Image 1 (cartoon, chains in turn brown, purple):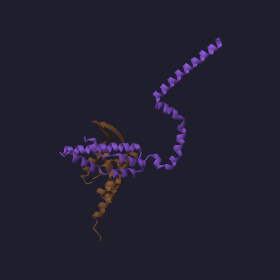
Image 2: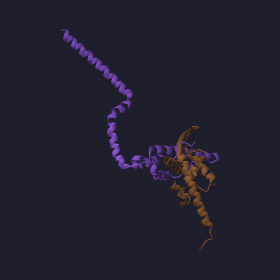
Image 3: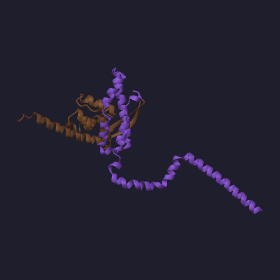
Length: 116
Length: 145
């Protein structure tokens, strides 16, 4: 999810979109537009995505087996819904653990008195 | 729903992805998803009392640059079809596959053009019957004389 992500958010965002997508899809299946809206909502608009860039990320996660997709016709529109797989759930747990560890480390570093 | 003419043009997007070897299945689906996403953005803007033209411009901006989306898709090796991921293997497999399929080509062509083939077969059968009748008549007339 690099190009547009890097334009609107710092480079240390690497891996965060994947974590967010997996976390949101763990709760319910959603289509792309719903996911973009949900990311905005749950992050308090702190993370802004180039909206179209979500699709390469979703396709990539599907290819890696973390997600599965199915098309549904909803009021004359074709929606591609994504849902988490067992493999995706494992990946989410791993990413969540990594994120907690990094967050703990950064928080700890920031709370240390500076030794300038 | 916005009119067709204001919709983003996905032809360059499609060509870029296919040339880069992205699987046609992913290309088709990405275009469907981006089209639907654009419609959703326009509908949302229209709901907030924005005029149609502004809504479409906002939707295009929010969707992002199609070249960036294409570049992003091209940078994911898993989305490419296998012939682009393993070109050396494809170099051997494709010719072998073509040779193996060669005997099946008439059958495939026959299935694809079944009505024409049926007409042709009927005509051939009828002409064979007429020819056989004529030959029989000639043979009988020779024998009887």
